[in-house]
Amino acid sequence: MRIAIASDHAAVAMKASLVEWLRAEGHDVADLGPDSEASVDYPDYGYKLAEHVAAGHAERGIALCGSGIGISIAVNRNPAVRCALVSEPLSAQLSREHNDANILAMGARMIGLEMAKACLAAFLATPFGGERHARRVGKLGTPPVAAPID
Image 1 (tube, rainbow, N blue to C red):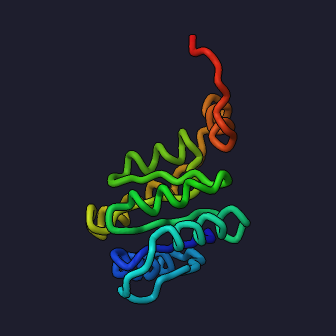
Image 2: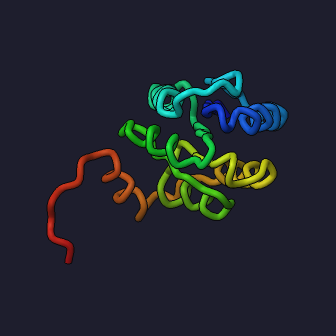
């Protein structure tokens, strides 16, 4: 699978370990940076990752920062992607099965490397469930319509 990964300075070490692990698993990984722990702004890397995935250069993306929150917000500003912030494998699985997420966000200061690998393994192995979820997912890329809820 073609996977793109980006982080901020707080997650550079986790990113490097995940890149190595993913390549050993046989994936084609594009590391979009940064390359050092020098302070950077997570939105810059989140936007870069979202654009990379939206353009079809990667099938899936991985967004990392200290908490995972900031970079996931940045990534989700692109309407062509669906980024889910997770900290355990079941949420990673459901993000694919129910929401057709194409980018996974995690917080390097919140979870350890082995948990991050378990989340990624679930995310990469799970197909979109389709059918009843497709209608809902279709609404995620469009502005909400003011309609009464029955």
